[in-house]
Length: 201
Image (tube, rainbow, N blue to C red; front, side, top):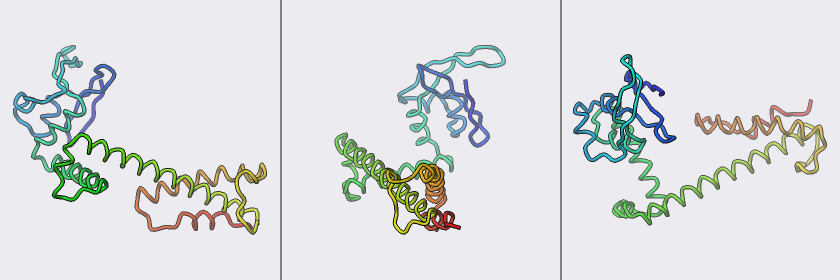
């Protein structure tokens, strides 16, 4: 069993068939859903599990991850509504990425449109990762070339052992800086920062 804290509420999770399911009562209490039985009515992904208490092993209702989200959408707590808004924004962006206008929103309920949207999103993320990787390698190659006082950028396969050793560290620093920039939205030039750090003395 594992316990997570959310807004001062302990939420117990138990292993159920290789996945972590939450104790339903903990979720409904945390979301301010006073009538747990009513809240769970018509919710799929509900099962019975066992959890340890001071009195020993207790049989409880547990729910899967999808059902947690379904209960969140029943809650009127501010934190739950903020999560709902975030989900709505994600779906809106997904709709826009498939070229659908706002008045075509109901097409997103169609399974075929959902598949197309998810594929486009997946392809876009994969392309972004490839572009970032290419950019990081190019920055590292140029930085190493600058470090060794070479007038032009040398590709990895033409570098000496010493250059390759230095390149490995510079590439790690480049990827780390790109990640931090993306995470915090920093207005910095990754390439310029790396080049400035690796100027030949």
